Structures are given as structure tokens and as C-alpha cells.
Image 1: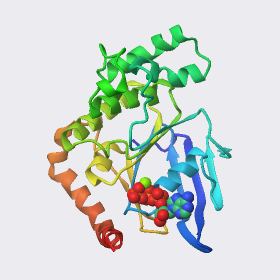
Image 2 (image 1 turned 60 degrees about the vertical axis):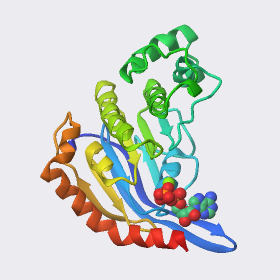
Image 3 (image 1 turned 60 degrees about the horizontal axis):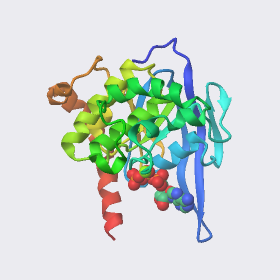
Image 4 (image 1 turned 90 degrees about the vertical axis):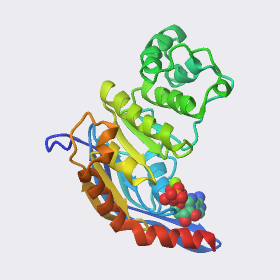
Length: 268
Ligand SMILES: Nc1ncnc2c1ncn2[C@@H]1O[C@H](COP(=O)(O)OP(=O)(O)OP(=O)(O)O)[C@@H](O)[C@H]1O
Ligand SMILES: [Mg+2]
């Protein structure tokens, strides 16, 4: 929910990004202005190649903006920080660590003792329903279970800002729906980090988010910010209501042409 008195957690002020490629400047992001409030869940959608991942990498401090500024809690971002967690498209669990040791990894990096890290990690493992699998290695898990372990790992460090780049893209449709449900549960039951979630799937964005940011094709600009006013907690049956479908249609109408032309230029 957007509550007016909530503090701004993340501020993007006129963020532009240009890459050099073969001596030519490629404009990827063009003056993106946007603020996200503490505890808010914001999803970003837009055609392939419009600069979504680039935007997230700039927020994470892995890349710098060519122009403009990114502030987290009022402080200018100048590099990666422990206040942020990043979940990638593919789960990036360490294959040589068990589920438990993967989930405790971030805590160990913070200097938490192994025993204390295990105690802190267990509720997150339980929350994603991996109790009993603590000593399994990633290759012993299904894709959905791996991505659940990945979520537990991301939440276990209690990041103030969680950046998620198409985390469910590799999953089959059914597992993906269950993971959407799972993500909302873990978010609502934990300390409600501020989340920025990138997806290609409009229904995923609308189901999860408080607001959906629709980007234009490259260079990415904000086309529209769509408030999603469905109450919480949300149930997957929401997706079958006419109100939900109407929001999907609206967003699809905003990006249809661009998504189709991005597909064609990929095929060429
Ligand atoms: N390091 C780089 N050097 C040059 N160009 C880059 C670099 N990284 C990304 N680009 C270009 O920037 C544009 C945006 O890339 P980005 O990965 O941010 O898009 P995206 O919206 O995440 O796409 P997708 O939906 O396919 O993941 C693309 O045209 C890409 O080729
Ligand atoms: Mg991307």
C-alpha cells in the first residue's frame, strides 16, 4: 500500500545510462525519475532490452549512471552495500554448500557465528517449506526448491532493499505461480523489505506489486506508473477476477507494440 507519510526508500533522480559500443553511444536509460517508499513492493515491466537489468544494477551499485543520482534512505549510492540483496534470474546457490549453508552464507559474511546464523536461518527455511532439506545440496533439489532456497537466502539477511531480476523466469508456469504466492507470504511475514521486482510477465507484476512501473522500449523511460489497488493478503484466485484482467489489459495496451517490435528485431 502506498501510504503518503511513508519515507522514501529509493529515489531515482533523472537517471540516464549510455553505453559505448563499437565507438557508438547506445542510450539505454533516459531520465528515469521515480521514488519508492519504505516497505513498498514495486514491479518493473517493459520490452526486452529496454534497460530493466541495467537499472537494477545501477541501484545495486554494480554500475554507475551516466547522469542523475540514485539515493537509498537519502544517501547517494556509490557502490554495492550490505543494505541491498540481489536475486538473479537463475538461482545462484553454491553447489558445494548445503541448503542451510547457502541460507547462512550472507549472515556468515556479516560476521555472524555459524551457530547463530543457523538459528537465524531456520525460520526462513521453514517459511519456504524446505524443513527437512537443510542438509541437501542444490543438485538434490528441484528447480522450484532451489529458487525457494534462494529466496530464503535473500530474506535471511533482512535486506532493507531487495532487488529481484526475473527470479522466476526459469520455472514452469505452475511452480512459478506457487512461488509468487510464496514470495508474498515470506515478504508479509518477514520485516517487509522494500522490493523492486523485474518481470516480463504482466500478471506476475500485477499480482505482486503495490505499483507497476511500465518502461518504454530502449532508451527506457517511464511510460506510466500503475497503482495496484487490490488488498492484501492476496490469493492466487485474484488472477481470475475481471478487475485483475482489466489491469492486465491496460498494461498490455501500453507495451504491446514495443514488445512485438522487440521480438521482431531479436529474430532478425
Ligand atoms: N555492458 C554493456 N555494454 C554495452 N551495452 C550493454 C551492456 N549491458 C547492456 N547493454 C545494452 O543495454 C540494453 C539494455 O540491456 P538490459 O540488460 O538492461 O535490458 P533488459 O530490459 O534487462 O532486457 P531483458 O528483458 O531481455 O532482460 C541492451 O540493448 C543491451 O545490449
Ligand atoms: Mg534483463
